[in-house]
Amino acid sequence: MFTFKPLSSAILAALLAAPAVHAADPAPQPAPAPAKIGVASFNLAWAGSQQDFDRQNAVCKTVSWCDTRPRRQPGQSAITDEAARVARQCVADTERLAGGPAGAAMMAPCNAYQGRGAPVPLVSADYAAKLAGLQATIARLIEGEGVRVIAFQEVRSAEVVKQLLGRHAERFGVCDAPHEGFQTLAFAWDRSLGQEGRCSVETGLAVSDNPTDPEARKVRPGLALELQVAGRRVSFLNVHLKSGCANIVPTPVYQARLLDDPAGACKVLNRQVAPLERWIDGVAKSSPDFVLLGDFNRRIDEEAAAGIPPAQVRADGSGPAGVPAPGADGRVATRYLWQELNDGGRSLQQVPLTGVEEGCRGFSGLDHIVLSGALAARQPAGLGSRKTAVVQAPGQRIETSDHCPRSVTLSF
Picture 1 (cartoon, rainbow, N blue to C red):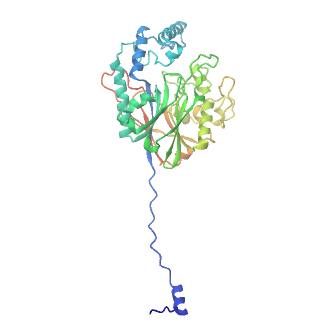
Picture 2: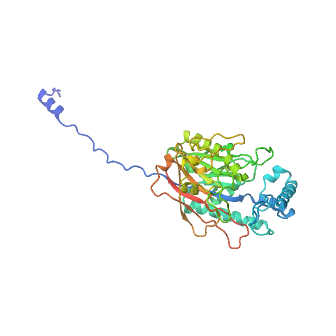
Picture 3: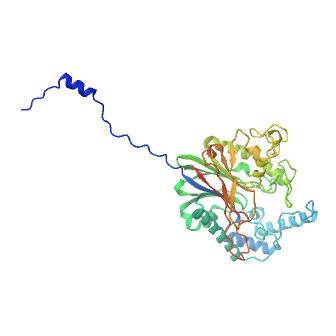
């Protein structure tokens, strides 16, 4: 029979003194590569459904494609009384045929697809070609540029966006901003980034064209999309600000205008400043990583390059820190949009335009992509954005869009 013998004290001491044997430490693992996601902004130029166009076309044929907005002709310093009278008559005739002001507001204006020349008869096939061009352009962004989040402007509804996504429709989630006008904003995002993106509407940006007129139309609201990207909460803020007050450097076509300019468009854009700043500040508290993008209708790159001293940003010399206090009509004392937004306490960085694809025409300087300071700090040096040419068939009579989509690949 085996008998257990206790270890001698000498052997036990030797065992305790021996160095411990450990499994080999695992080799250090490289840090995971950051997720790279393409983000784009695309103004679709009054994109509705085929049925929307056919309804608009029927009304506009009857009113001879009149223009509801009086316009200053070349060489004129102001809009003439006769031009204003003709526009008022056009409004009245269009509203009567469209079923009232609300019905007319949900229809593209008669000159929306006519370009800058004399009105020409258009047919359903002309609009179908525009929609086909938009669908092909969006496919290029997704397949060629790796875009997985798209902010749309000048679109009728989420249903139209789903149609324009074409073969990618099942892959993308879509939301829009309900609005009382034809033009609104929408997002499309790759569902792999979040099956249910959280969308919210910023109604504060939908200021009235005329605060003294309760029947005046309202400009577009803002639309936010929140996603979890690479374990981080990221917000995307889509804007389409008031047009007609774009630049601080004069051109042969456009006058230089500050935001305290008495022009009506500048007054409306000015009234969007305070709600825009409050919206950005509110999002930043819960989502320090955010992207502000869309059609700003303002050359904020031009403003940034001007190097405006802080004391000149506001008319009262108070400097741009904080949200300015609106007056009775909602306007603030600011003169410059970019300096007001990027006021030091609110750190923002524009993504510069570093590439424009051959064949890209249309508006320049209005569409921008802006990063929060926190997100910008994690991007590689030399980050730039690019413009992709829209797809347009030879002889196409309705332009696919007067904006080229602008995109950037971000690291998360």
